[in-house]
Image (tube, rainbow, N blue to C red; front, side, top):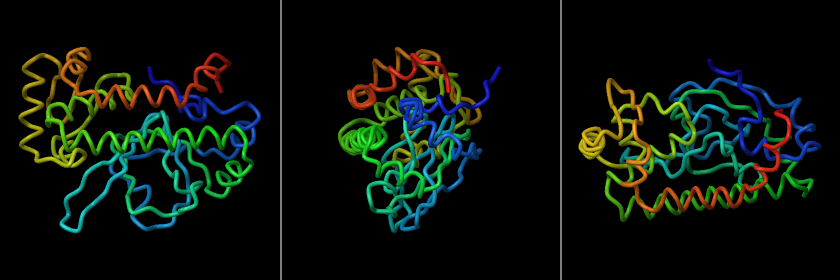
Length: 245
């Protein structure tokens, strides 16, 4: 049975001190994020920050040729819209919903006000920004130096962390677009993982059967990003021990 979304399902909101959360809670709006929805376009003024609880959002770059790739993903560990408090307001990337679900939305003015208090929320958001930069850097290195199969294993593991059920709807075309590789490469890599018994792929639905198998074939990039995220957001452990929001 699916549980109703709660702010504490987002790790950043869960890590906020009680007083900081109390100021923001009345302004948090739960919104559905359908697959493929564009949260912001390149160069456009961002109006809201999004804190996913069950959705996954891809930060995407599209070239003039039409080729594209995801440079980072945001799930229940983070937020979409870091440029709102970093002073840029716009970004050359786009944010597209990769996996449908829900998120809590916060108006940009309120986020900036809380950030400018220079308190715990500011420090938490800056550490998250560093974690996001680590993910982007590691993704760039991974895409350059590791095989399509290793990249696919990394992507599956990251997605699995954000969707504990182990099953998600995703076409090979969409996965190829996310990784910036040819669809044929994804077909071949997914076929090998399925033959090994690590995943089941049928009609656009991927089910992870053996996580340990994916971890064995993934490159070091997955572990590097996960370790850094855990280090920078260690506050979550303290708040999760307290009553749910």
